[in-house]
Structures are given as structure tokens and as C-alpha cells.
Image 1: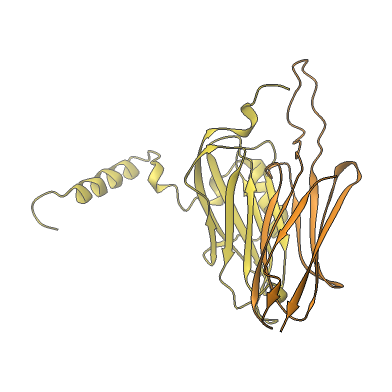
Image 2 (image 1 turned 180 degrees about the vertical axis):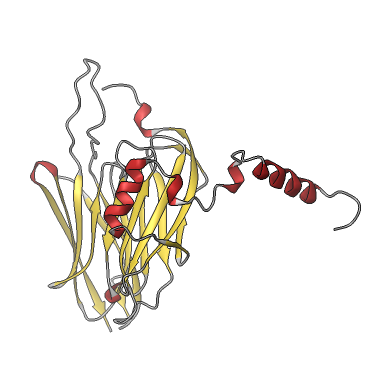
Length: 106
Length: 160
């Protein structure tokens, strides 16, 4: 299982713009490398990143092979209500990992 | 300008003379017109914009001008926008010139984001130009481009 990290303030004022930083452990094998025998190493990357605030999708990204190993993605969101920020990474070979964090909005 | 030649004045006249000769000069690479991009990069931009020509401005693409390690190059894109329901950024795309594939990342956002910002780390195979394109809610496309020098490209690793 890949380790995933979300870094964001757990307390926010209503209407505040929060910066969310996320990191996940993944090799992001590009599919453009070859073994010493000349065989192409098959692609194994994260292709989709989705951030949800409770049931609402707030931010989404499509990733390509050009994203570095252990993908780092940072984005912003408005603190609307106390809720759970859930980030899901999915990709090749059925990869899917989620991480969530409770954010108290006052 | 004073009669005495200054270093700045001299550099300017050399740059102007070089440009007049049609020679490429590295400090003049920004902004890079899309027409100068390779075919697959232009095709990737066309897929994003549907053929519309993005205008320079509003978008700010931040990448260190020199990266020793092409395996992890920090990229920050910000777009000037009030991010209201009427006027916001719908998508931010990043494309590259020389990797095996032109696409880097596409993000979809809306007024809920509060700001139009995207940060990630890319892999770059070579010294090249990177373009960031923003799609606004009014349907317009804006862009920024920057050149980055990569000392050790991401694809030059030993075979595994």
C-alpha cells in the first residue's frame, strides 16, 4: 500500500482559502524506459487525482507520465463548512488510494 | 543614454543586432509563439483549446530556470481570476516540448477553489519550453511559456 499524505490546516475560518498539499508514494513508471535486455518497461502511473469535500468534487487533475515519481499536487479550496476533505489517486493496474482529513470550519 | 557606453546599453545593442540577424538568442525565448512549437506539442495544445489560439497573459508559470535534476522539476501555475461564479478558471493545462509525450497535467477547478493555482513536480527529459494554458469560464484561453535548462534529463538513467 502506498503511503499518502495530506497537509492542510485542520481549522479554518469560513470563506478562507486553504492551500492543500498532497503527496503519495508511487514510482510513476513512465512506460518509456527499457531494461538492459531492451524490453520496454510497461507503464504504471497514477492517471487521476480527485479531491472531494464531503460529497462535492472540488478539484480534479489528469496526470501523465511526465509527473515525477511520488507525485506532489497542491491546490486551493474555500473552507465552506466543517467537513471531510478526501483525496483519491487512481491509475494503472487498478491502483486506487484515498486519504482524508477532517477540517473544522468556524 | 549618455555618450559613454554602459554595459547595459552594449548588451542591448548586441541583443538587437543578433535579433536583427535572425539568430536565436536564449534570453529572448520568452514568450515563445506556439507556431514555433513542434508538431506534437501543437497538436496537444489544439486538443486543449479546440483550435483557439491562447493569448499571452493572466497565467503565470513558475519553474526554476535551471534544473540539475530533470526527474523532479517543481512547477507552479497561477492564473489571475476573481474565481466567482460568473468569472473563473475552469481548467489549467501544462504541456512540454521535448518529452516523449507532450502532456504533463490537466486540472479542472471552479469558483470553489478560491484561487486558480496548481503546483506539482514534473519529469523533463531535456532542456525545453514548457507552456501553461488556462481555460476561463467565458471560453477564452490564456497562456504563459517558459524555458527551462535541464542538466540531467529524466530519461538518461541507466537501463534497469
